[in-house]
Length: 211
Image (cartoon, rainbow, N blue to C red):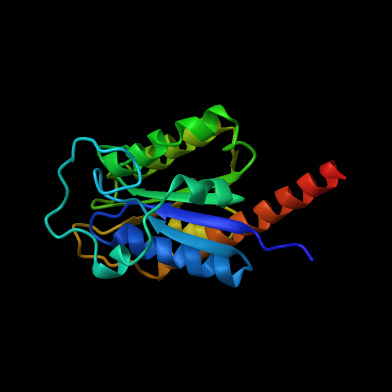
């Protein structure tokens, strides 16, 4: 019997919003039949990645629920058939913490171990036009360097026409006045199901090639 799709949801969250979206993605992927690892990227200097300068973060930091998630490791990416990466926006780019984690993938990248996996991305911002698409596209650029198979949600479901972002799930807190709502959760569910379905198809195709 074929094993389920292995999905790693790896995120950095400064205030808890990205963590909440990550949890929705993980739960939806499990309902779609995937085996999921939900992993937070540790703060710089905390983690399995090398020590380095510690950038400024928000005063409150992520909630305790997010801190309960195990810290992400390179092995989580290598284990996965599909990886969904999430980061808050930092001037239209990924956070230093997530970038530090990505930079730690150099050795498996050189050995070709990041290639042929399915990748997707999500983000959150404080303002509605605060760099969501730029951040998602920055992550997608890395996926191309990995030799990954990029799976964007696109406008493949009615929920995505409401959410309005074809590149990935993106939530705006509008100055922390708007919690993660049904629009964002529905978009995350569409993305998770699509990633699991296409990762399963990629695995099935790879199995046929081996035979």
